[in-house]
Length: 126
Image (cartoon, rainbow, N blue to C red; front, side):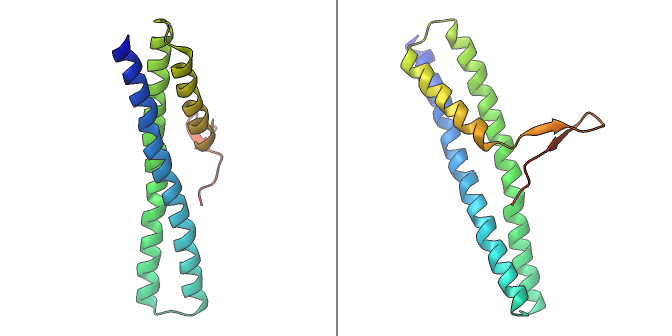
């Protein structure tokens, strides 16, 4: 049982660095977007502007990657928590894991099916 509780704590803690990384990339996108707009307004050198747009595009590409890794970690945590509930884990450990789940679910974009049956993100990316 102690090993199972330790594993639950590890799975819950594994979400936190991904959340931190996601926030970091979101801030980076805001910062780089402002820098790109400033360069456009100043009529910066086209080569420099193109390079800045590439930096911004790379930062934007990292956000969906973080979302995917966070969804994977969240699914793993949820599955392990369900498995552990049957073993009567201590309430404080379960509550801690549920708090992490609630925080991560709040951060992930909400998806809904479109006409073809595939999922489409409602929340727009920055």
